[in-house]
Image 1 (cartoon, one colour):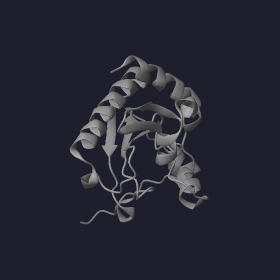
Image 2 (cartoon, one colour; image 1 turned 90 degrees about the vertical axis):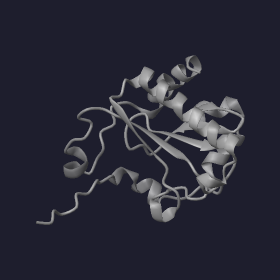
Image 3 (tube, helix red, strand yellow; image 1 turned 90 degrees about the horizontal axis):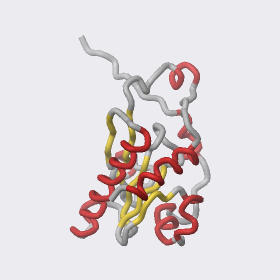
Image 4 (cartoon, helix red, strand yellow; image 1 turned 45 degrees about the vertical axis):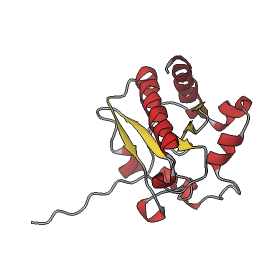
Length: 167
């Protein structure tokens, strides 16, 4: 017997999918912005080669994006130093999220290319999504809504505090 494929619905992301696009890449804007704009742009940390910021259209609380500062569309275009830096910053993101939000696990992933689901196909980035036992429920399916238990700015402050402590 063949089972029907189950679907994951995320209707709250339609604003990102159908909404107006910024004229500039938001990763590049955040990378080039002065540090005094970090809170406004939800940048949590930056290195000379990479940065990590909050996803404004998160799948879950604490959903982070780790990206190279250079505007490149694929992982294989990164030089070895930048690829290494991206991984090291992802490790810091995991440690900061563990300390700030105490998740039970994580989804990590890179959607490379539009057909692979990349919302920003021309600037490669890694998703870091914290997960908790029981963090899925009926609300997205029945109510067409995702329940986020904390405001993005409150999560930002909590996670940023941990980034400042963790190396």
